[in-house]
Image 1 (tube, rainbow, N blue to C red):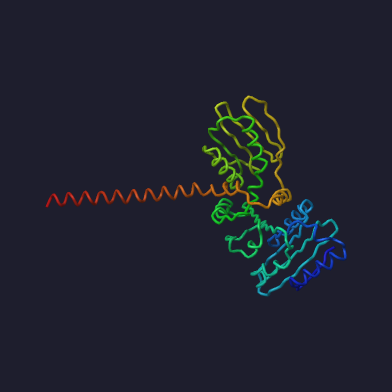
Image 2 (tube, rainbow, N blue to C red):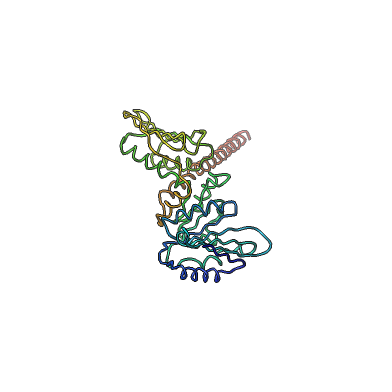
Length: 332
């Protein structure tokens, strides 16, 4: 059932949800959270499909906010209920001045006494701390892979990190992290070096490198491959490499020194799987926080080194000036 509400308001949308729910016999008590999705028209279809599929595991009220620029302010909505739709889906299209202040429209539509999660499938606000909709949520999901400069996007998220933030580039690493941890449990050798292979500009590889460097305290080397995505991780030991290689995005080869090579299912996951995983937890992900913030360590080290060189240069110049002054005084 899809009900169109052109030229509507928050009060009318809320009243229509209550009316349709009563008529169809769908209780609001069965929904566990409110999921806000902020996107544009180009991302709308993909976001709707992924959120509805994830809603089968997490019945929720999905508020899909589609914003667009325009001189004339307008607010149109569609209410999706029943016919295989888990929970409730409300598509809200905003234009003009209304789109500049979306929280005033969304706040009355939140489920009472339940968690609120927000997801930006495409471009996320540069300053989430100052974003109206971000303030409504306890969990905030972004995707650096959708940015034209993924590493810069991750560093920006590290600088303004707030507990409850997460990025799908980190979620994509869950199977890799599990395999690497299992490999070290099975073969607890001292790791001397790490090599990560991925396609160019892959933010998941950047996060994995930061995580392994912070945990293992060893040098991590990045190499560019043809993809897709992350293709290999090799951890060097005295007896040989602990290696996980996935050249086709489907099956991975898992090798530990002294043991036969094995095949492991390591399929690249779609948005439904990623969103479903993120919605299983409402507490802050402290491991992600440490990993994303460690991306700034190299940047800070470079800044400190540059500052040290600058200070050293000034000291040398000052020392020369003093020597010249002494020589001149002696000459006199």
